[in-house]
Length: 487
Image (tube, rainbow, N blue to C red; front, side, top):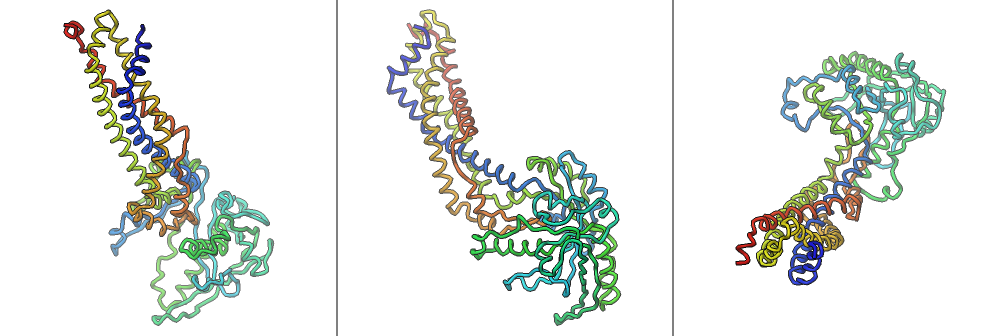
């Protein structure tokens, strides 16, 4: 009888020992399967959410890690130079990019869109957003949709023409259409110590309307309007801000801001406060990466080029800020996998070794009859693989359910509550538009289920652990001396 048939007979005839080994592997397999199921699920959530957030990045001051520096009175902040912005934009990870000069204008005659809610106060005025990428990055990224007219020409950008894009609601509010000249009555104010404001001047800014857009991603969903939450208030505010944004060439925005500051210096009683305000050009760069997976590599490449106190922020960082519960759960499951694998190696090795000691006369007879040690080893390995294979397949199913139960319990427990509370308060990512990702979005994206990655990972880890645990018993067989056993 060859060693393969002997292995099959040994498994079926010695039912007690086979059941003991099966039970040990089944229990430990459930622990490994459950932990891997949780880990795979949390990783899938991270990948899917980051893919949904997209691969956008910006450069901004790093207040979080440089609080002491910014508290100093003599702190010097170097503005981002256009040459540096363009150099970073040449990165192989960047699909396209833009950089914007921005300013605000307060108006009375030109009506901005406001809300009936009193939570935001009266919003009088507009955000002027500069554009250097003539196709308009917000249109390319589907944050806004051009419904009438045209985008900028390269000549408009280079010459800084007074042409712009406005929202359909602003156009409707002021009776404007494509081809009309919109006059923004920019007003300057002085504020007394008692809070009273005094109008100092009015400057008319003529803008030729070349296109009308509608916001897309910032519009509130009807079902969300019924909820009274901080998230919805932020969405409403960002929606109003987008609606009241006017897109202009960068040079036009800089010229408007310069004229405003010059006039403010002439008329304000506190003119010394504005010295040097318009000497530097400040831009906010936005880089659209080819893939969300390129974010980390882009950060590593761009960070060394930045001036002091600056850092790279990406849209995917929103997950890092509010996905703490998933990360904590993934970390816990990772520890459980390692502990379970080590425990499995030790327990199975010891159990099989004890069984080998009981079978040393049987193994000695095989060797004394001239059977090769490799065949005896092969018999033991086949026995282990047969029993462990059945146990691992069954624990693959039950372990998945175990992982679901444990993860649901963790998510609903106090262990992750502190993280969840932080998640609900983080709503806006500066420079990257609205951030409507919430704790509920991440929780809803989490699901423990059977997947090819889960099955393959578990079987590789499980069978690999079983094979490694066979090393000690096999060493025992190598050291067997059939003469001593048979004496």
